[in-house]
Each structure stands twice: as C-alpha cells, then as structure tokens.
Image 1 (cartoon, one colour):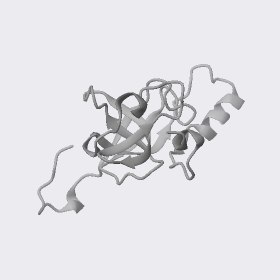
Image 2 (tube, one colour):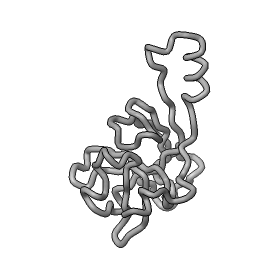
Image 3 (cartoon, helix red, strand yellow):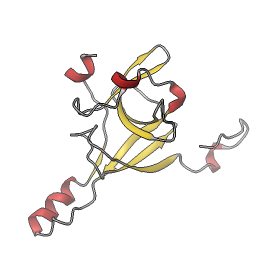
Image 4 (cartoon, one colour):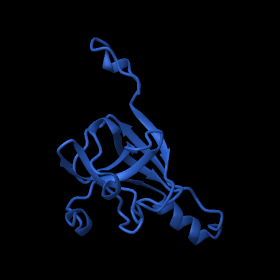
Amino acid sequence: MPELPQDAERVRAPLPFGVAEVTGPSMVPTLHHGDRLLVHYGARIKRGDVVVLRHPFQQDLLVVKRAAERREGGWWVLGDNAYAGGDSTDYGVVPDELVLGRVRFRYRPRGSDRRSVPAVVGWALSAARPVLSARSASRRLRAR
C-alpha cells in the first residue's frame, strides 16, 4: 500500500479496502476455503480480530489468522482450526509491519450443488456476513 505524504488530504484518498480469497482450512469454522473477504488495510488491530498478514518467512504469501494477543515485538496469531497449523505456534510473533489489515466482511460464493429453492434460500441467508472479533477469548486463544 503506497504511503501518503503527511500533508496529503485524507479526504481525497480512496478507502483502504481490498478483497482477498481464503485458501485452506486454518480458519474453519469462521472462514472456509473459497470465501471472499473484505479487508480494511491499515485498520487498528485489537485482540480477537481476524487479520490479514504477510507470512514471516515467505512475505509474498498473505495469511488470514486471528490476532490472539499482543506480545513484545508484535502479534501472536492463531488459526481458528487447531488442527490446521500454520500460525504463531510455527513461526512465532508476527511483527506489526507484517500485519496488513483487519477482515471486516465475508462473502461465501454459491456452490454448484445448491440448486434447489431451499438450498438457494439457505445460501442467501448465510452467504454474506460481517466478520466479528472474538468477544471473549476462546479456550484455544487462552491455551497458548
């Protein structure tokens, strides 16, 4: 994301939002493979938020995790699926500069198997939702 000079007017700048796609099972049940995300880049991050970050060892790879807690040097991030791995238990604390933004909204595309009226109605009622912060720390977030 390009930086703006300090004297630039923020009003004229486009909103810092972007779209990302989920691949893999690390955030199940919150997010599923194929979900589309609306990401608020540069948003303030707090404990429990679902965030997009650059992988600490492979920085061209974007990762979606939950910000579990602030630690010295950055954020401890965890996937919601304890069995999937690929979080701070593998690579440690993620520096602040690698945490890019907060996930605000998720859209689940309709599968080709959803053709009946009840299936389409069920999809329509659950396809688009805001992604909320974990209000209280789950057992997984407290365990580490």
